[in-house]
Length: 608
Image (cartoon, rainbow, N blue to C red; front, side, top):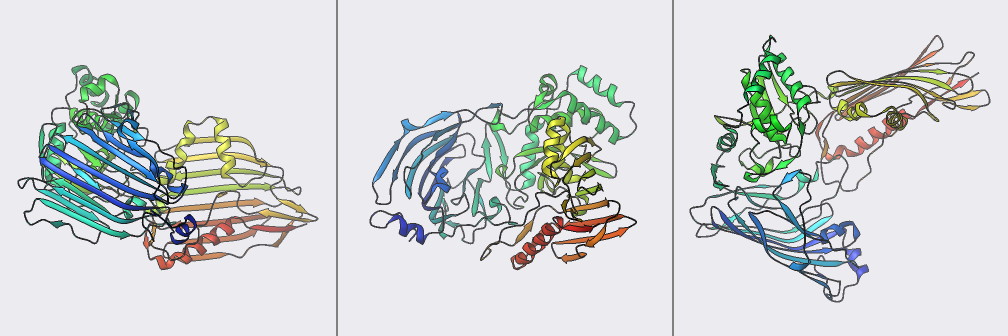
């Protein structure tokens, strides 16, 4: 029933028959390369939007530049009976140069359309013409969101016989076909089911059917290169940074004054990384040669700002000045895996610096030198990357720390009195990836920190008398004193006492029927709680929870409660293990989290 509804079907029948939010009725991309430097691309998208959840699919947006021009556009919207609600023409489009980048050559042409009724079928047809920038060709990605099915999608690419085209597919089980004359590549997909959004599943970008296309040899803004391998790709990238590491004499003199008295390479790297933090700031820039080439190091040192390319190249230039080799490294902050046998620029969006030193390899995030030197942050940890050198590109994978190194250790003391009031002292140590979630506290004022702390703790009517945050490498320690007049509930001669005043927002995943995806836990971690509760004089334990010990493939959890000399000692230990696990384990995962959540909410009963 997932067809464009043109005549007699009613809205009720349509919604009953479809579990999707939208249906891509037809997606056509036709790429005509007339030469290595010129292409015409014709697009057609016909989408039936079933409800407001996918209303944004009615919006048209395309990116343009002086080398990518929109040459034709038309469209229309029809209702369930086929009646035309609105026709769109090129004069309806608006232009915006707004961008996250401070400086950019690109602009967007867009049309905002809000459907007056649902279902609505929106058709857009447009043509783009590109010159001198065919470093890669449009991707084939007809399915762009959850709960969107695809009836028919076609990608067709025609190129001169002497222009070799490479391709690679992800999540596609159909082959790309080649015409008899070898000039045309075609990929057709039919009846793609909608993808469900599921807890603990791979991100959408790793699940979507997608095909990449790129010329083997290319001409890009006057430069020539080859994508026949990652090695050759790296040679082209190296050519873009060659000669751009020259520093002014006064800057070179300052660098030597900072480092000549230092004994080790690590000390010199640390000094220059600190200098980078103090003298530069990140500003996104996408100018010149398609945004692929870094600004010269001399320009960055003079202006004090640059993007990831410019700042990494500047740091590389400073290290080179003191005789320390480093490698410009291209990586993605979104794609964990690169296609090992398909080199292309579109798989990556970021640049960092690799510094091999004796006995270690440092990975420097030059866009944020406030991070500890060599700290591999969450957006790049474990990601594939291409190390660029004069020898070419080398496929590498960044390190990832052990799950248990991502530590949140809480030491808590609770002084309880007979009225239910309590004085709570909290000390939390956050390491590695858990440290990242605490870093914003460093720049908050006391009022903001108190607001965050009240959200973190399970302390009714919390009165915060002290809060202190300090950083030590990839670790943050938070110390706080909290008082509550109603920490425990009083009923007659009994006190009902919460055992864990933290993990307030710990939640359990939703149940899903007919799960599609295996379980994917991206980041493992260790949470340890040591809680000491001093009992009011004259009270003893009447009821307490039983100890818990759970071991599963994806994690372990333990809870113990002991008492001694008027004090109760509570210890929680939760380990989540990163990795992929069979979807059949999902009910066990839900039960695991329910147990953890209910344990964190437990109380003991004291009686006078």
